[in-house]
Image (tube, rainbow, N blue to C red):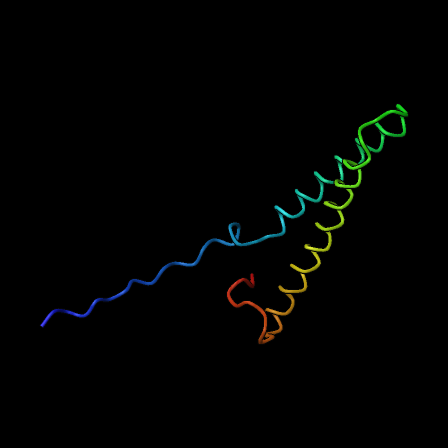
Length: 91
């Protein structure tokens, strides 16, 4: 009779690979910096880039802040032990 197959336990990922906050903050900062640069170019030179670029950067900045709020909300729910929160991401 063949021996049963045993599965080895996979070690958990380090927290620096599972924490979403640093990349979110970097992305938010880049969107905000691009928004400020385009705003200065638009207002300072009176003939800056197309307005769509300005609003795209503004939208990226605002949506990044909303995403950051969702991440903090989810982490708080996981710490409280809410049933709907994902498990295993609490540091």
